[in-house]
Image 1 (tube, one colour):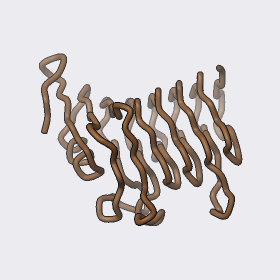
Image 2 (tube, rainbow, N blue to C red):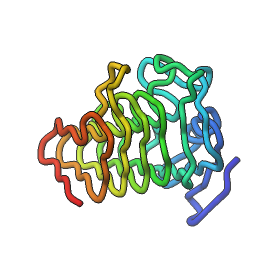
Image 3 (cartoon, one colour):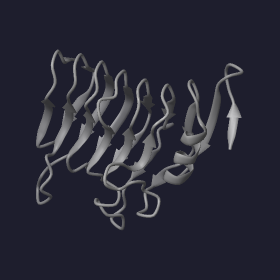
Image 4 (cartoon, rainbow, N blue to C red):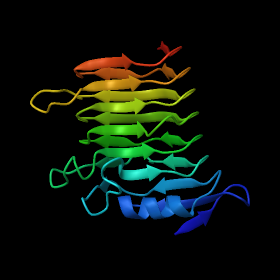
Amino acid sequence: LFIFAGSANAATYNCNSCGTCNSAIIGASDGDIINVTSNISATNSECIDADTYGCILLNVSAVTFEGNGFTILKPSSASFANCPTGITIGTNNVTVQNVTVKYFEIGILTSGFQSNTIVQDSRADYNRQGGIHVQGNNSIIRNYIATNSNTTGTGGLGAGFIIGGFGSILTNSTSSSNSIGIWIIGNNITVND
């Protein structure tokens, strides 16, 4: 289901599961909004290409994933092997906002070296490897909370933020109760409050 919004060229696609969100993303184009309308509980059958991705794969550039304050979670019935990430960003110029991601290996991941990603007004709770892992260049993470990513009994890295690439900015964000607060593996990274 899509609703035209804003300009004549932009559309809003509503979704309420991993599958409906991924279908909406496939139909989206530059400037469109993927609009989450309820909490999402990932299932093994809905997770895509489990070796690399997970519940949501944002592979269309210049779209906004609007979480509307809802939560994407991996229930205990879904395996880490089948559903490792809550949201994977697989292209450039993507915005993710107003969403909570819980219980995955990694809450939000840029797959490869995607550039100009914005993740804002969101949070990640209880993700084993990390709350957010940004590998691309010139990305912005702002107003983000990462909590309870830890290695206790899990074998995970347990970082709130993993920031790689070149020239990314982490601002006005909080890391709490993680094994590692912020792990910077890139160059010219700016961290400020």
